[in-house]
Image (cartoon, rainbow, N blue to C red; front, top):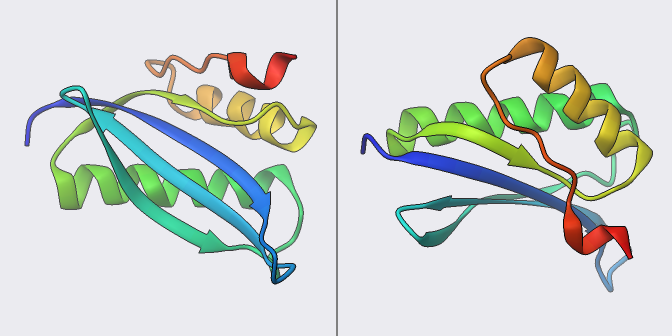
Length: 103
């Protein structure tokens, strides 16, 4: 409670052909799983991803009592647009590109 946290989001296709979105939070030097969402039936849009990110932020704030200060996602166009929309909504958030996805 009371900690600053960073939110990370990454999507992948499981062996069962389900599209999964994983949300992790780092707070006080510890990594925690926030949620894994099966997005197989969701629209493949930046607005849908933004909604999932906002849901994860809300969960972190209400269930963990932490304040999200930064959020990063993978480097897809959908993710980049969702991050732009997120930063418009929360001007205080740091929204860096994912360095691991820049290769």
